[in-house]
Length: 198
Length: 266
Image (cartoon, rainbow over all chains, first blue to last red):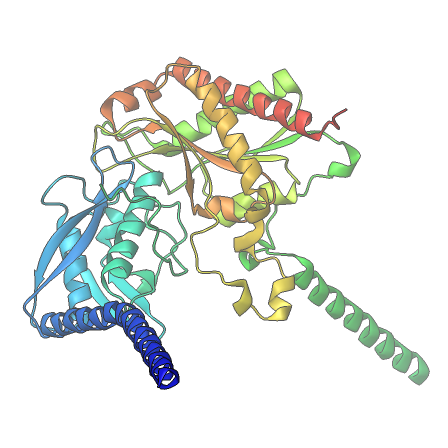
């Protein structure tokens, strides 16, 4: 009798042990998977927002202008209202960039410049074609030219995930430079090191 | 007569072949040399005969290319030539080094041609002189630029094996970026000793003229010609002489440091 009771106790102990291990595993897996699930949920929300914005409505873009002291690039957030898709939005962003800053900062492109065309190839290279005013009316400075090139490149690469590199064209053709110092015949990647995000 | 003709044609054929092979070889061995300047009249100086220190100075712009123009019409191309000539005199008189200008008059050699003058003469230092300009007429200050090597997506893994062995014109300066930065710092220090400007910046930028240079190479901008105040100062010959002297002192500072680095310690 005593022997049977002891055996039952042992079985109970084992059962409790199994329950404890199972609940431990449950807690661990819950805390491991819950954040991932939430992350996926959030990502889906962001994606659905993107789908909504890419159908039109409003998209906020960061435009890169020269700082007041002309030493760095600063960003200005601006809404683009457009009923069109990807490349048309990129065009809108460049048109806004040409208008110059509404808040603080300085322009980086002569305001008389017109965007002639913008297209993106399958490798993520954006060709942005400006009218001749971009060189004719440029101040011909060295650092100004650096800021000018990267204000265009950063605005496109930073806001549009499909754009990886940018090649600047003038009047539909390859051009040597904007102001005489930087070779723009090859594509540029973005340069965040000259941006002051504060 | 017949035999003579055959041997004559044979010889002509062989010699033409030799000339052809030689010219093909020559065109391949001219590393990173743009095709448009291979026929240039620039004569290579023979450095082996004299182990002189050689400085090549590039007066920015020239000819039809005025560069930046100040509010009263002062042209960058004239200022850069004047300072370059003054700097040449300082270097020649005080240090005895050899100085070559990329242009000695109002003309416009292409950017690649200018760099080629420095490379072909096996120059020890290459300095390009410019003024700056901005949309903002209040912007002022000096800057010394060295080449920014990180500006393009050059992924070495994407290069084919044969391409890896060729030194591209775009990559020539990469080996000298560190020395170029030290040279920029030395010149900034000398400029700071004068009261030209509140600010002298050292900046890195993907400048066309520096990328193909096979030696420490920098560009100096001696103020903003678009600023009326700085334009006025740039009209003063004494002021320009002081700028040239400050650059010369910066060069000497760099050479002393370079000598110290090369001298074995112990």
